[in-house]
Image (cartoon, rainbow, N blue to C red; front, side, top):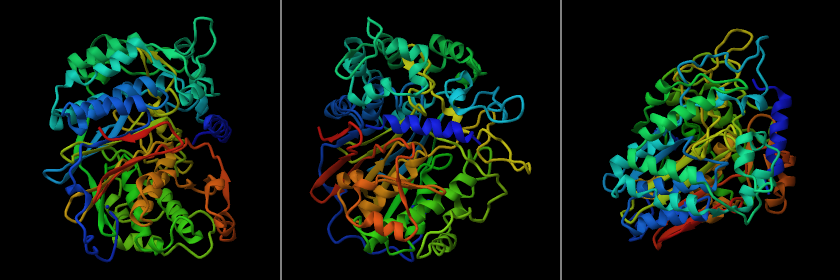
Length: 577
């Protein structure tokens, strides 16, 4: 586990800068009488966390590109204009909807631990965990980046334009410069240890040595050069050759040097698989499999399927109470059992079994008590408790193209500016701190999310796509936010499906994160009487909590066309070409 003092320090830093295969239901209800949205002609839509990135995606759609083509362009700009959240040196999960086949594919671009990684790599000589604040800026925090390799795989299967033609806008912005946004400026000036690292200080300093502020123009010609190499060579440009050598050299530097080698980078392989899909109400929700947090969101929905939350909207005490208690149960199971399924058995079928979900829902009492213990689903082994921190530093995009294909993609460098170390114009991730620092508990039981060579760390990223019973697109949504992603996504899905809100309304609703003992939230945003009513039921809302502010982005298909949502807590927009 990460020491409590380190958690509090990092949480304070975050707070300072913040300016169903699935869900059980007795039976599927009949679909809506009106033809669902997917039948509506549209030019598409892009929803992402930065207007420059959205415009790059829209330009790809205007040129006849696919949703995946646009995602490549959006990621290239996000890595430049929103480097605190994602980039070329990070990882990603994507769910992709094919309008012709009505199938949803999951793409896994999660980083991997190098061959030299070990279960005790985040322990001191005395066997106790090192401080998180030391680990997060270390060389050993960086995993082999997978976002670009994953995008290349998806684009090779679903792209319409040439790969080499998807990076021009980002390269142009890097060469000529872009205007530093207020959010980026806040991160630059924030108390984060990464922002104080030499690479970050050098990059974000004016000629006179002062830190860049909102409105300044920031150029990154090294990033432009890297993009042009990736455009010409594909992910090999990042995972082999000079850039790979630069990554290895930078991670090998102290303090706490890593073990990454050129062989680790060259061996990286993204994954494509069937999404995990389960019914919820009259719809089907699809997410990537573990180690993503998607199946945990499906469990949360499956628990709520056994409640009457649909009768109690966002202005009611009961609606939020049920959501909070479902979150507690969802987190208890996710924190105990989730890890990389290539290394540990993750009991997804047991967790999503209708009988198990019904039993978990039955634990929701009229008054909240102590945090629930993890359940015992079928296929679950004995696992140690896990308190992995999972701080924020992530972004989400949703893209629908003119043919109705859709991308829901969450992308990350882990926490703010990754490790704060840069090579060739981009930040390196600190994704390996998403592993459990303690591989075992005192009784010797192994943590599902312990470090191992080649292993992917557990993730909360859970990009979701919603279909109707006929397999037609209904919605796509997702959020950044560290471990709070599960709560953010669950809230948005409940809002759109059960509470019948618009996507924009869903993104703006108050956040409530119920993981363990505290109930972190935004008390000032709830409807009158809700905070007091929840307190009377044992749910005492606390502001802050250190969770990265949500960045929900989504698209909803309606009989009149596409409508989008962009979280007002961020700087994003949702626009059509």
